[in-house]
Image (cartoon, rainbow, N blue to C red):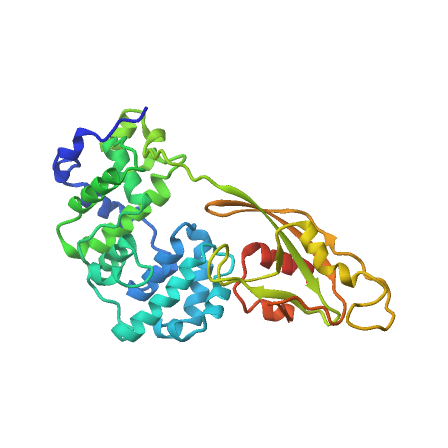
Length: 371
């Protein structure tokens, strides 16, 4: 059983780690850290902020292409602020966690209107902007403005917890707060070292002190890592709360008319994939089939002229998709809809027009495969 909050909480943070921790980390980063990431080309607030938002819950390898696409389309924060939100969501499609994209746009607008497109250097002022939390604000301030403030993301907490063999439950805010205090206390004394140090502790957590299969044999902190010495690397950090996902079944009608247009709608601003574009959605197969049943006859339902009988929607393979709190089973049905078919709140769009909208990954993949 992991230990409760340890007596280390009462120990001054600066004595919990060797004083040369920062110096060692800075030296390691210069020689072994990452130096080829696209947002490192210029340590300016806009690209750093954009990369930090994209990197939340997303791997570097995935972010690289999205970052370059965004920077090419929106080279300045003012360009992002002026863009329609649908275009922003379109470029974000497939990256997931779409609230990040909406907050990104809101933040760009606020920066342009309230700060003249210039990022404030103060951490608290940065945190007052939409979508910028404590760790993102610290990353911008330390990397771009040499402010002595510590980032406190999962990589940093993992490195510090392992070096200290801290077994406290990170589901408890007191433990997380204490690790943040340690992170702040061990910063380099010289402000000019902050960009290298901040990049270094992120690199160490991402490439060496990884959650699984850490590379302890090449870690610059191996000689002082208590988790390594005590055989606790695989058990630290510990977090008791697990994400509980609820199951949800969705039924999608992928209707395509004789002109090749596809029926869809913009999803509500609340709920799953808020604000993105999607196919007609139903709670059950019966409800989906009931929506089209009046058209499955020798007459179209909109005209009294005879017409060949229409085929019923064709069921496709079920798509499984995991969200943070939901496990989705998506049941898509493809249907060659007749001329005149409409569905309330939906509109027909060319497949090429769909690519200009924000799409969830399952929608994007089905559209590409079928249309």
